Image 1 (cartoon, helix red, strand yellow):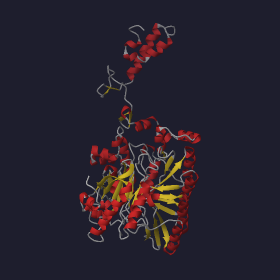
Image 2 (cartoon, rainbow, N blue to C red):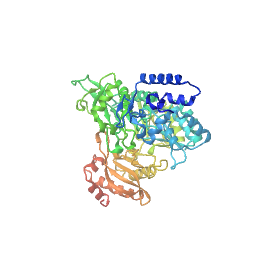
Image 3 (cartoon, rainbow, N blue to C red):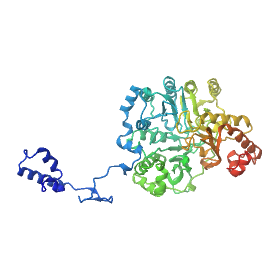
Image 4 (cartoon, helix red, strand yellow):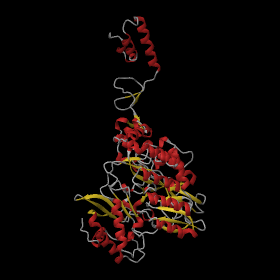
Length: 602
């Protein structure tokens, strides 16, 4: 190519490949000159956009400029973490072909598809189990008897023969083989349910107060709000694939807490009385950035909403997080860290830009205080607001429900109630709308099925994550240990009347929220054996507080005697019979509590 040919001038770069490929025999000198001029004119009409070496955007094609860098939600592709790069390369919702092939070949997934399948509700839990766990969505914590019966069929035919009720008021079923992927998804759809977005970087199950609409003290039926947000998410593709997981809860302000202050966004129903700057009535307050695994509760944002505005506000806030959350560091990718970086006011301003209405401000002190929470209100028989009707809270220790009991629950809900089953964040279930005259028969049916509607003060407040029987991150068998410890303490101390919440989690991801338990256990290895870090004095809502470390590490085999000594000291030294275990642990130093339990100082 002569020195004055097409490549001698950058503007002729488009001409060169065509002329070179054609060869000298194709074009005459005049034709070549014409084409060089033509392409130079095209380039002059197309404004140049590039980047300088310093990263500035330039309109001049000078030496050192670069092509526009590829970005994903404003982050350079080269800076994305592994999971974000997978999302950039292909939306995980478009993994149907992979699901079909894995199901047909009964094939375990590679790491990339392991991640992608979580967007469809399937978790490959190897090496804990060489199988898939399915997590469903149960918006607002409400199931029908038909759905429960269908889930029992799935668990019986393809799964582990049971379901697990979770701390987000939903259902998990374990031990599906890859060949079951597509049949399970088809069955879910036939039941009118969904598992879409139940794992990975998505909005998890929308929780709600389980007694909403039937609780005499409920300020607002929040179930329609939870269901509306769930449907909006499922039908809004851009709300899948967030920087990390996201939790939303609706609390009706009634008898049982939805633990809204542990969520990324919590909507708390409150009453505003006459004489304030807003008309009297029921509103939602907005709580933001709960992430108790990182030792932080959601804080009141100073925002108050008309109830019908809540879903729109949630959608706006989630979108702000999606576009601005950290996609380079998974450890800093929750909402908390975006608000830490920006400050609360800027986050609210960015959300407000997406809304067609303003966010109203009202101090929390201008709202009526919430009434007392019944910590055991999810267990036992209680009157509803509807005259002549009651609900029965059924104890399901650590959420394990075998298929025969799943079917029994479905049948009892149909025969004695309205076919409705409600789940709670305490891993149990509630059967509502039972006529008073039929309560004895319903209770008898539950007893015949091996189900209890009473529980000791420790077992009634015990929750546990999956543990090492089904999770590769867990260091201990949380469910087995939680039930064993709770039953030991309940049997040892029959004089206890007030609930003691025991939260048992297998690792520092804190799926069972051990930092908010009266007693919190986090799995760890101790001299090669299963053990726990023990914390005391956590709570939520009016009892809000992060638990303090009591024992740095103890083998589970050594733990029950220590806890018996501690509870024995509580029984002997409490100020009166009304003092709670939580109040007792908080009014004593850790050194004093260790002395009570004969635990050596760290």
